[in-house]
Length: 300
Image (cartoon, rainbow, N blue to C red; front, side, top):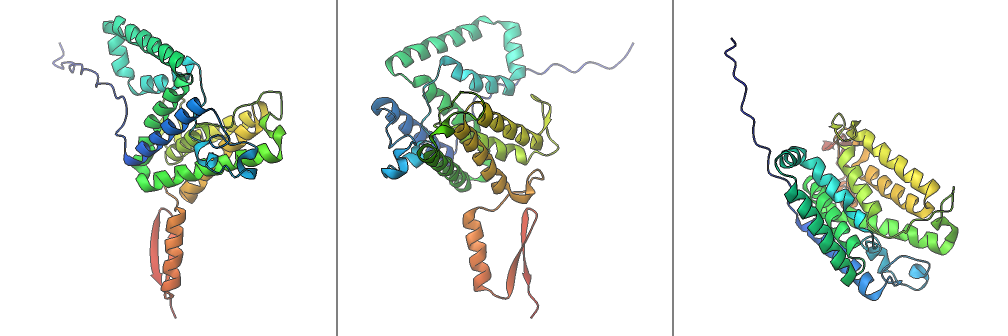
């Protein structure tokens, strides 16, 4: 007989609902809440949503709010947050289902019932709740790596750039709302470009790490995001696909040449400071190599 005893089975870890929400994520949650509530109560005016009159009429506030106005959605908009929660808590979910499935089913039914009632009182509530959950899920993970200031700066740059592209597209080429192939068209408001840019930031630094859900290399997932936006551009909406690709390009530029190797690019503020340092101290030169910076003394 063997003297080896099997290890006792550990109870599954308690479910992880949301990561620690930092200052930058709180600011973006407030932007989503205020912008979407204004669009629900007042309507999608030119001051909130990017359109042909954004630049001509001087409604420049839409360049910021357009990225945070979550469009009204069906109850299935909560599928993505629920899917992400299930992927993070597979062990706990299996243990809970093996013990008793009734509490989970009752909680799901109660959530849907409350959501339907809320959406009846406040049309568009589904989209608002889904947008807040997506920001609360992805935002803290990017902010934990990047820091509040850089995280907010990058998010605002993506929001302004994609909204400006939407405004120019609506004003100059109205046909760009539709698809190049087919007759479909996607709205150009919402968090999709920003969420895609956040995913790109998270995955570009995961070279060599496998994503269990898709069995992909972390950096390879970036190219899957590119392919999805190209598909959107061709078959669903030119502007929507172009906005997603622009967000991914900004993330690629943000990570810099260290993409896929854990490197991190320089923000515009950092580049300005380094340029000023080189101008002040002529005998020093900043050498950019990899994820670190070195100052070398120039030989006279």
